[in-house]
Image (cartoon, rainbow, N blue to C red; front, side, top):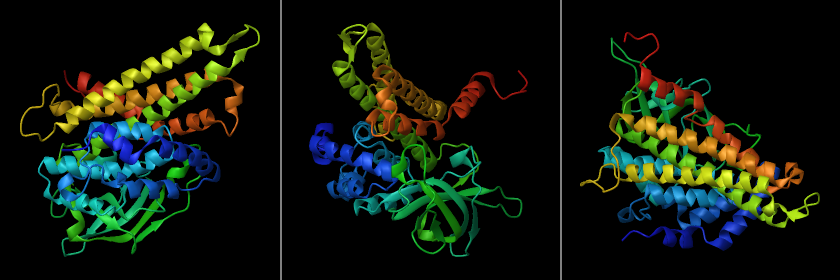
Length: 401
C-alpha cells in the first residue's frame, strides 16, 4: 500500500526540517549559493525517489501528493523547491510516459531509485516552443546514438546533477522530415556548465547555462524520437503535464507562505493613526482575504488536473477524473498560467498589507516577492497560453471560416 500524504510529510518534510530549510534559505539567497545541504537532506530522506514505483524501491507517490509536497517545500525554500522540481519533472514524466507505453522510460526510474539526480536541459534562448522544436543539433554517430551541440539555459541544479535530460534536432535526410531526439546525458565529455547564475530571485537554484559541444548521447540513453511540433507522444506529454502542474505548485506554495507571514505581521502591527492592530483594519483584512481567496482557487485547479493526470493509463476509469483528449495541453498550460499569476498577485497583496519594513533585504516577504516573479519566465507564459486558447476558439489567424 502506497504511503499517504501525511506519511510522506513525516518522512520527508517534518516541521523541524521545514524550519531548518527556511533558516538556510535566507543565507543561500544572500550568498547566491547552491542549496547543497538541503539537497543532501532531501536525498537522504528519499525525496528523489518520490515518483519511483514501490516495486523499484521508490515511494510510489501520486502527482497530487507531489504537488502538495512541493507547495510545502516551497514555503520553506522556494529555490530548493524549484531546483528539485526539475528532477521530479523528469521522473514524473518517465512514470506517465511508461504508463502510456514508452518502455525506455523505465531506465530513468531505475536510475532515480538509486538516488541519481536528474536535471532538465530543454530551455534554449529564443526557442519559444520549447519541447516541440530545438536549436541544438544532433548528429548521428552511426551506432544508434548522437553527438549533441548547442546551448541550454536555465539548467537548474547545475553544480550537482548526475544526469541531464535534453533534446536536439536530427536533420532529415533524403526528403525525410526533421525529428527531435530526447535522451539522457551524463556529466563529462562535451558537457560544460557555466557559472553565470546571478539573478533577481530563485538564486539558490543555480540554474546555469549548459553548453553542449558534441556531447555524446549513447544509443542506450536515447529515450524517444518524435516529430517536430506539438503531438501527445508519451514522453513530451509526460514532461508537459508534470512540469506545468509541479511548477504551478511551487509558486502556489511561495504565495501561501507569504500569506502566512503577512497574517502574522497583521496580528502584531499597530496602526498609530487608527489605534488598532492591522488585523482589525478593514483595508488590510480585504487585501489578505483577496490573496487567500485566489490561492484557494489555485490549489483546487492544481489538484483537479493532477488527479486527472494520475488517472492517465489506468486500466479502469477513475471516478471523478476527466480525460481531456485534445485539450490536455490547453488545460495544463492554462492552470500553470492562472496559478502563477494568482501567486504573484497574492504576494503583492501581502507586501501592500505589511508595510515598508518588508522592502528591506532580510525580510522573508521581500525574498518571497523576488522568488515568485521567476514564474513569469517559465513556460507556459501568458503570451503563448493566450495564443493557444485563441487558436482553439477562433482558429489560426487569417484562416478561412
